[in-house]
Image (cartoon, rainbow, N blue to C red; front, side, top):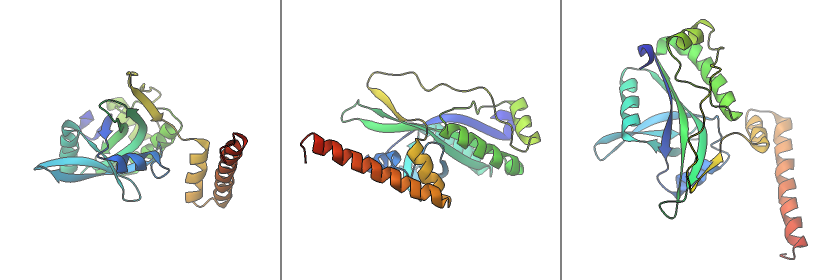
Length: 214
């Protein structure tokens, strides 16, 4: 545990069913979104789950990660997760969706600085950049001393490509950025997002008509 006041890593999560997988692909779960970490007891074991801002349970972590998060939660630390990427693997059949989340946990004494740090990491992940959040003693000090403004220059690569596995999304598309800004009250972006979506629908219909499908 980094200096016993901060813990940061990228951790894999799994989806429990097609329902969670479908939600994970939608606009309610964008790369860079922050998730709440909650615990559910399953077969006498406490499992850490990701819950999005709309209350949806999206995926769960393995036993080791869940155990670590449980320990940090028992200490009273703040636990946060940020969506890094979503992937699909075709084996075992019929295939399944999974992903990675950036886990950032810290002592509540440093909440003010790390809350700002969280937002900055979220923005970089949304842009397709994976900062090295493991930090170290010097990195932790820089975050605290800068009030959360400092972020690490080092990055972490995506997992090695495996046969039958594809990264579905690892950054925010332009349309997703518009949707997110409209949610934050930007009326211009809200209108633009609808224009964009209607344009896409019109293009699809035109293509189908041209091909004689409709």
